[in-house]
Amino acid sequence: MLKYTAIFSVLLCFTFLIVYLNKSKITPFFFRANLNLPSTPFPNSPASETSPEIIAQNLNIPWEIVFLPDQSLLVTQRSGELLHIDEKIELVQKIEGVKHLGEGGLLGLALHPDFTKNHWLYLYLTSTNNNQTVNRVERYTYENQALTNRTVILDNIPGSNNHDGGRLRFGPDRYLYITTGDAENPNSAQDPNSLSGKILRLKDDGSTPQDNPFGNAIYSYGHRNPQGLAWDSQDQLWAIEHGPSGTNTGYDELNRIVKGGNYGWPLVYGEDTAPNTILPVIQPGSQETWAPAGLAFLNDKLYFTGLRGEAIFEVTFQPVGKVTLKPYLYQEYGRFRAITVSPNGFLFLSTSNQDGRGQIRENDDKILKISL
Image (cartoon, rainbow, N blue to C red):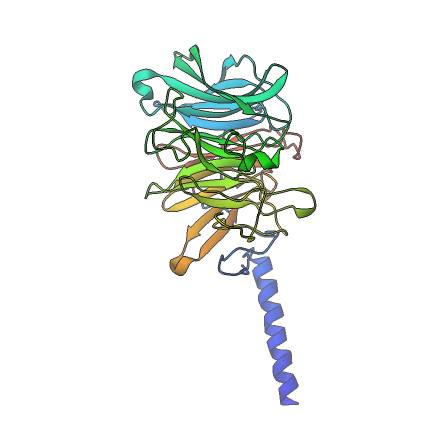
């Protein structure tokens, strides 16, 4: 009798604990393997320490956010507009030649490390060449809220309705890094003669650095649709990447990028291995989809945005190789795309609810400022 009473008491205490956690909006985390990944979905993701501040709204699929030296913003909209945002939202220019289709359009944006001297601005966009969909990188001079001196840095990156990559970042080595998707041709990601399904690395004029691993623009390969790029405090490059869809949906990836590395697509994904391929640092398996977009590094943590995941994810590296993944703002603002760190240490991010895959909320899309 005492045995059954003890069992009943344990069950009763467990029930009260679950009720308490639920009412207190504390999310219990369950761990998979050594990754310390939360269970899916995230029913009560922790709120931010401060509520997000709306910086701009009524935008049309904002894709990238960059800070100018005066701390005002430049923002690309996938439909083709470059915006300047300070006290008000102003159109800088409708970029000529942009083909807005599916996931393509006006995408990445980066400023040269010496922008205050040369005023060079770089754009990644989807366009056409000989009736073929392509992506390309263009350089402009940006002064007095105007673009001049258009120069094509890299052309004929394969493009498609989906999987166009599009992120631009200058690294600590002052070279330009570019993410490209497989343009719905998976095998091209393993092709050393194709620019698709890669992370590329170029000099600021579009020429190839002498130490690139394959003697061309390719820095790493075997990518499906890499999106965000960020460097940590040790100058280690990280990338976030979309996993497969359809019957094998999920398997998004956070990867530690090494020069010449093969990240497996389409040969392997998830925890599958193949000779000379590199496993992701974290991936959610098949039961969860982040659809990651932007990536930023702040205070020894990585932060990435989720489109389908509808959250900001904080990545913390723990001792003995464990990684903790913590979601913020889950389903509060819908789909998140861009994320960047302001000069004074805030996170700025954009929603992407007007991209045809989200539920449009009042005054979408928005740019938010948040402290985590």
